[in-house]
Each structure stands twice: as C-alpha cells, then as structure tokens.
Length: 362
Image 1 (tube, helix red, strand yellow):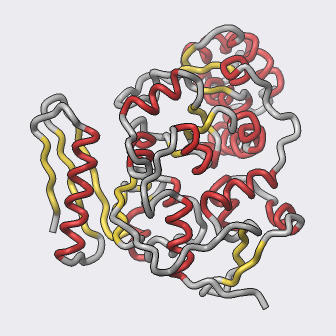
Image 2 (cartoon, one colour; image 1 turned 45 degrees about the vertical axis):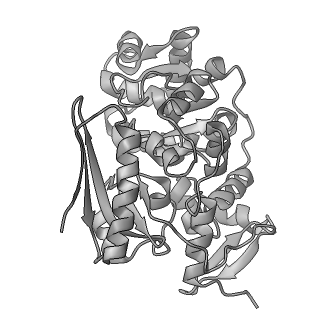
Image 3 (cartoon, helix red, strand yellow; image 1 turned 120 degrees about the vertical axis):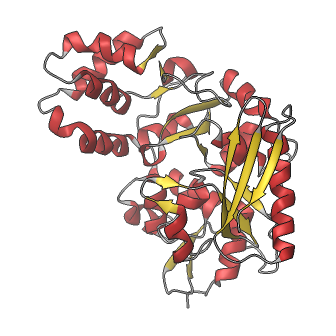
C-alpha cells in the first residue's frame, strides 16, 4: 500500500528542504541550486529570501555573485523573474520556453497577428550580439524591421523568443530602472541546452519542494505534460491526508514531525508561497485568500511553519519601518518571537539607518 504522509510531516519536510528550519552557511550559488532559484520580480525580494535562509548572508553577497556571473536574473519559472545559479540557466530556460511563448501569446497575440517569431528572434539576436541594451532600446531598433507591429509588443515578444538575462545593477538591492537585455549564451559563455530534460526539472523541484503532486510541479514551473515524465521516473509515492498522490525522490528523507520551525519572514512572491497548487501545507484557505490576491503574493510570516501574518517594509534614506499584520490570532510568545525576527530583518535591511521602527497591527 502507498504509505500515508501526515500534514505535519509534509510541512516540516517542506520547510527543511526550503532551508527554513535552520539557517545554513551556504554560498549564494549553493543556495540557489538547493532552492532552484529565488523569485526576483521585486529587486529586494531575493536578498530578503536568502537572508531568511542563510547564516552570515550580507547584502553585498548576492550582488557580488551576480557581478561575477555566478548568479543570473531572467524570466524562467511561470514566465516570471528569478535569480538562478549560472549553471542552472542553460538547461532551465529552454525547458520553460513554451511557458514564455504562451504568456506572450496571451498578452500580445491579438496585436501581433502574422508576426514571424523566428524572424523576430533572428533580428533580436543580431541586434543584441556583443551588446547589452534596454528593452525599450531593443524595441526601437526592432520596429523598422516589423512595420505595423506595436513597438511595445515587439520588446516583450523579443524577451519571450530569445534566451536573455538582465545584467546588474538592474534588479540589485534597491535598484530598478529600465530592464537591460544580454544574450544568455554570450553573457554566460555557454550554449543553451538543445534537448532539455523535463525529468531534471522534476528531480530538482522535488529536492527543493517535495513531496508534491504533479499539479504542484506544473503550477510551480508552468511546464505542462509532466504526468508522463513522472510516471517513468521510478519516484517514491505517498498518499497525502487529502488522498492526493504525492511523489518524491527515492532517497530523499522525510523530516520528523517534531522538527522545530522557528519564525521566518518571507518576502513578496517567495517561491514557497507559489510552489504548490494546493498550498494547505503552509497556510489555510482563509489565509491564502488574504495573501494571494490576484497576481500579488504578500510578504508572509511563518509561525510554527505556517503563514500566520503578513508584513511590509518601507525603506527611506533616514527611516525604515517594518509593519506586521496578523492574519490569525497570535499568542504573546508568538508575538515576541515574530518581533525578534522582524527586528533582525530590519537591522539587516537598513543597517545604517537610525530611524528603524517596528509596528505590530492588532
């Protein structure tokens, strides 16, 4: 019979694989490989997500890894911005190429009827060869070659059809601005894989987030058709408390149900919040409705391994304010633990600011 895995064991195993039961002294590339990347839609989020998982992590560490091209930022999983270890991008980007093309079609398909995407890729690669340019500059240089196509659609379409990365300082700590494009193969000095293996994605996903269902894997990655892939991999199978079939790596241990789960603050869009179709392993449906609103995923507070509060931070030159909003009742002991972890995050994020304030909403 398929063994049963309890909700508590599933929760603790997930937290352990996500480096959330204790901080580890990993380098940035090591952590990115363990986590299969971190969300980077907001420039500060990768820094906060790594700080909450790693011991000794400093603000300069991720920036240095990106400047050394040991870590890269680009559109991958679900078609959204992530930072990955540099050696993961060449196999992962080709696997998610259909995801990016579906997103392009959904956003611009009706405005680009008849657009030759192969020709767009050829022209875009020609223009970017040996250069880094912003999306708007690339758009403007593509426009004369594709008369009648809305220029804005050209810029975003080029990002979908070309394997590009976004060099620093864009996307570094508190740095936004126009998004720069560089051809990934030139930037990394290595070709993209021409035969990407979806089984590799499944293995890496399970190592970081398992055990999980096929629906979870597809929800996290955006990649379709993983049922057939999973069936041929010889994975371990469990039955969840809801009756769902969960898959895991054959040699991956489960965490003990009594594993302590300290308070952790996760940034906006953290992958733990979007890694599953069924997110009840880390939050109730009622909390999910407050955390996941439309396309937005709030920054969250884990208490005993589950989302119990949300938080926001406002960083200014002379002031840094972190606010905690409980989503479920918290005991005095829990509030004290949240306060201590939030104060540590505030010191990390604003080390040179005297006006640091922490506020708990009731």
